[in-house]
Image (cartoon, rainbow, N blue to C red; front, top):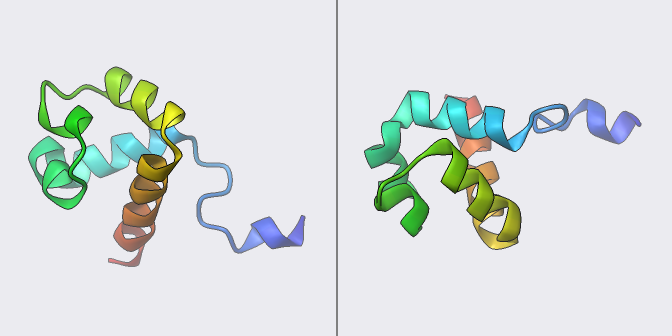
Length: 72
């Protein structure tokens, strides 16, 4: 359990992470940083979550960007 204490992603849902990133970067800024279609073409939280939950490499990119965002 102590491993999670230093993990900034612990306790954060993917939806929370995505909402914070969209609030900070907006969809255009997010699509510039992570080039995936669900952020470029008619983006929404719901469709992005569906894609990210099925696509581990894309979810990792979102989580990595979130970690960078936390350092700001």
